[in-house]
Image 1 (cartoon, rainbow, N blue to C red):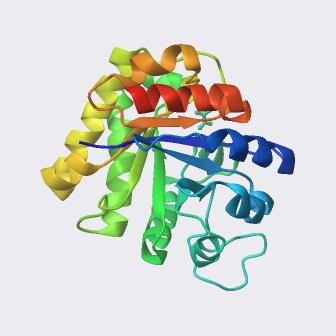
Image 2 (tube, rainbow, N blue to C red; image 1 turned 45 degrees about the vertical axis):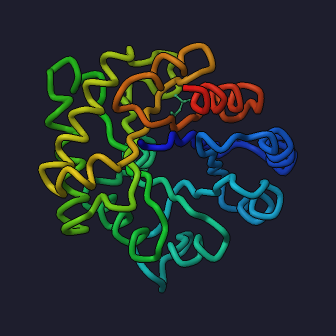
Image 3 (cartoon, rainbow, N blue to C red; image 1 turned 135 degrees about the horizontal axis):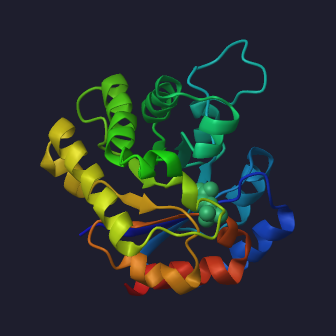
Length: 249
Ligand code: PEP
């Protein structure tokens, strides 16, 4: 049985006060599901010291390099030292706004794993790709790129987040059936590459306008193992309500 994970991606939002509010509210978190918070880099030390035991910390990006002359970049080892367990790689905003392609994202995936972090690999299609019935081709390539770079058992100790680009920050959510179909495809693809044992243990999160009022139905799908939450993670009440739905589901 896969334990559900609810992870908040704050993007370039939040401050120390938001860390404090989430830390206070998360003190009542349950054991049935995992809660994780991914604030911007400068808030990691505050979050590491304030979040209650059991609430995991994550970063939103990582360098594919170990160290060196890469101004502005942060290495996986630095994130580990800062208290992170998770790091998001390949978020669609990084892919679209900063031109990260599958190879670069795969390099970040490998760097995270090698340092002992759990990468949350974001995959997902644009609306044009969905309309052209290319969802499986696009998501399959994104999965394969990480697999080719990381080698056998690539997805052991990793998390995948299916985030249809057309549902991120738009208020438009994939229906539970649409999301379930792609989640099942991802698990199948990972089973073909890494074997069914790795695939069955792999948490596959859904991201894209998940909110308290749609969380339970999405999280009730067989292959949806949690959520990567953007906008709603900035409102502690909403974030914790989604977490509650995961813990009760
Ligand atoms: C995200 O950016 O990862 C995300 C899922 O955002 P939102 O929940 O705001 O759609």
